[in-house]
Length: 178
Image (cartoon, rainbow, N blue to C red; front, side, top):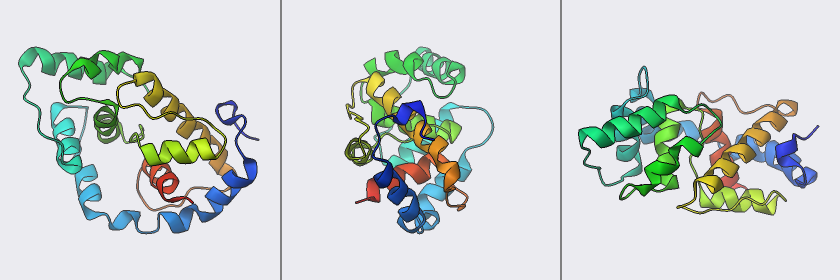
């Protein structure tokens, strides 16, 4: 049964995606830079987690004042998966967009997916329109919902067991799926 979030998906294409997924992500654990960054993250969400994500993504480091630090960390600590609306005000900061925000959320929680234009394009091709907009938190929220629906569909197939967050496996698989 396909979850409500995926109503309208091309079932055959989704089935093929899951059949091909293990091969699409077979090298994912070999991404030493990602894995090393992922395992640097410890304990509660912290500013250090954002720095780890920024280092991995090769983002220009942000210079934080104490008020900004507190504002961002309060939002990150109060948000609960799969919601993203509490993060909207963070997009007003210089050099912060939904992609960067998604990287922070991914490394801080291991649950949120990294926002990806290629993954959005694949979901749209699969019959589930998923816009990509670096400046719109609602678009990222829809992406999170779509991937959650895709995860719920997976138990019939199972996700590859390679020791990485499921959100990362799905994101990489969608980016590589033809």
